[in-house]
Amino acid sequence: MKLSVIYDSKTGNTKQAGEWIVEGMNEVEGVEAKAFSIDSIDEDFVKESKGVVIGSPSYAAAMTPDLHDWLLNKSGNLELGGKLGGAFATQQFTHGGGDTVIQNILTIEMVKGMLCYSSGGACGGPCIHLGPIGVNNNKESHNGMEHYKDYFNIFGKRFGAKAVELF
Ligand SMILES: Cc1cc2nc3c(=O)[nH]c(=O)nc-3n(C[C@H](O)[C@H](O)[C@H](O)COP(=O)(O)O)c2cc1C
Image (tube, rainbow, N blue to C red; front, top):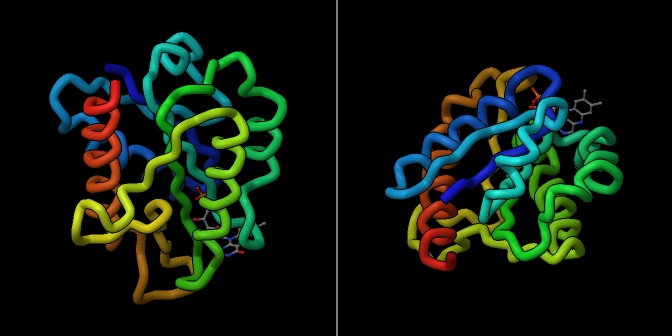
């Protein structure tokens, strides 16, 4: 089963998070997962994917304008309706708005007819309520993306397992 992760990333943090999600997905037997920037999508692979996870940096607690434009105007031929959907974010402040970013992405996924999944609390710890968020060390020296690698891996593994179960 194919699964896709699609992200916007200007300085590499969200790309890194997406690749960690793919690593987790590929640990699930029968899953072939790949990550794509919105600038270089393998459309056939995404169309064949049963699930798509979409990620963005937090820009003023919202997704990037480029991702918003892509979702609204450029993703229409990817047959997203009916696929399992998830979302993730990165940010530079601990309280930098990532949950709002994820909510915005999930809302558009639902409008497109996707079936949204986060794992929530149903898998026990660590609970991932809406989707995983990574905080980089741009502004907070105690923080850093590497602290969040396990959360992205675990989310990817749970998402992959749920996609296999459903499809
Ligand atoms: C225009 C702009 C707005 C941003 N707004 C926020 C914000 O509201 N909260 C936050 O924590 N980080 C904010 N950031 C920082 C980015 O979200 C953060 O560095 C992110 O990890 C960058 O992702 P990327 O490396 O994938 O591009 C902003 C960055 C830019 C360029």
